[in-house]
Image (cartoon, rainbow, N blue to C red; front, side):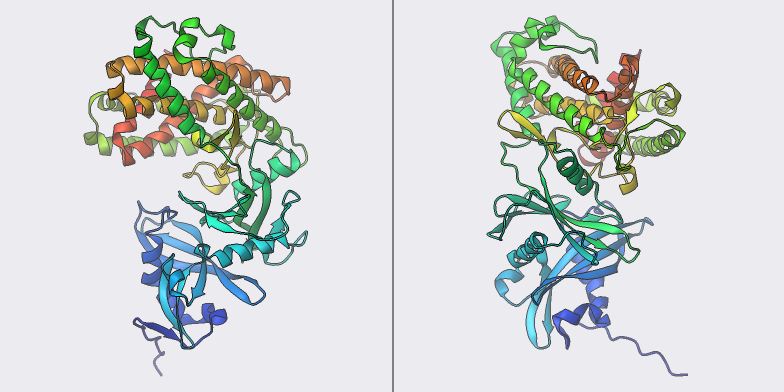
Length: 544
C-alpha cells in the first residue's frame, strides 16, 4: 500500500504559484499561515483577549471575500483554541500589498504570489480597504440576502467617500473614522450571534429615536456556515466631545478635594446621609454644596436623566421580543445564582492566591472578605424573585463613567457590548434596569478613590480623612442621582419596583459589580483592590 504523500513544510521566503484571489484554497499556505505566523501576530495585538491563557492552536472556521470592482480582501473567522480547554472567535481582515510603505503597517507575512513579492497585512491598516467597506455600506440594497451583508441606515446622508483615519487608543475593537463624520467599529472578538452593540445601537436609533447615543449608520455582517448572522462591523455617527465622563469626574473631584484645604474643612464635621436616600439638590446640606460646589450635582442630575431616558426607551417595546420587558421568574434566578456563585468562587481563589501582594488597609479588607465569604455567598444565594414586582429589560450591561461621553453640558452613552467576561448569551439576558445604575454608582466610588490615589500627596490630609470625606460625598452623589432617575422612570411607567425592592436590587447589583471588579484588581493592580473590597465591606456593614 502506497504511503500517503505529506505536504512538505515550506521555509521562508514563502512562495506560492497561485493568485491572491485563490490563495485561501491553497492548503500549503494555510498550514503555514495558521501555525506560527498567525499565532505570533495575534498574541501581540491589543485586541487579543487571551493573553492570560496559553494558546494551543488556531483554526480557520471560515473565510469570505470583501470585494468590489475586482478589488479583493479576505475576512477570516478564526477559532483560537487554548490549552485550558476553551476557545475564542476572532475576525481578521487581510490584504496583499506590494508597496513596502504599506508592508510596515500590520504586517503579518512576507510572501511571493505568482512571482510577485509582497506582504500579507491586517487590512484595517489600508485606506483602500476602509473606503471599500464604507462604499459597500453606502451602496447596499435593502433586505440584502447574500452571504456577506451590508446595511445602510436612513441616517447615513453622505453620498461619497472622502477620507478615513484610524481612531487610535484601540482596545478590544478597531475603529476607523470616515469622512470625519462616522466611525466604523470592526469587532475583533466575535460571537455566533448579532453583537449587542449593533442590536442596541440600531434599536435606540431607528426604533426609539433616542438622541443621546451615537446614531446608527450602517453595518457589515456575515451569514456563517450554520446560517447564523454574525456582526462584523458597526458604523455610527461620530460625536465630537470633550472626553469621557471618567475624565470629567476625576477633574471635578480633584477640585472638590482641593477645596478641603482651601476652605479649611474638617471632614468629620460634615453632615452625613443615609445610603440610597433620594435627594433633591435643595435637600443637600449647604456645607456639602459649599465644599463640592453646585455644578457637580447639576451634572449628576443630567446624567441620571439620560440614564433614565435610555431605560425608558429600552423598556417601551412591545413588538420585538428581544426588547419587550419581562418579569422576574425562576429561570432567571437559576441563571443568576449559577453565574454569580461561579464568579464569586473565582474571586475567592484570586484573593487567596494573591494575598501576599496586599498590604495595609487592602490586606485588612481582604482578610475580612475571606472571613465573611459565606455571608457574601449567602446574599447571592438568597435572591428571591417571588418578592420582586419590577420589570426586567435589555440594559447597557457594562455601564460606567468610561462609557459616557461629555459633549458641552450633556452626556452621550456609548459601547453597548456588555461585560467583557460574560458570554454573548448572558449579555442579552434581560436584567433589572438598576443593574446599570448600580454599575454607575460603583464607577462613582472608583473615581473618588482614584482621585485620592493619583493626587493624595497634593491634599494635606491623612489618607483616612480623605477616605472618610470620599465615602460621605459618594452618598450625596448617589442620593441626587437617584432622585432624578427614579422620578423620571416612574413618570414614564417603567416598573422598577417599590422602594424596598429598589434598595434591595441596588445593593445586590452593587455587590455583584464589586465582586466582578475584584478579579481585575487582584490580577492587574493589587494596590487598587482596596476599592472593590471597600465597596463590598461597606455594603455588608450598611446591612448591619
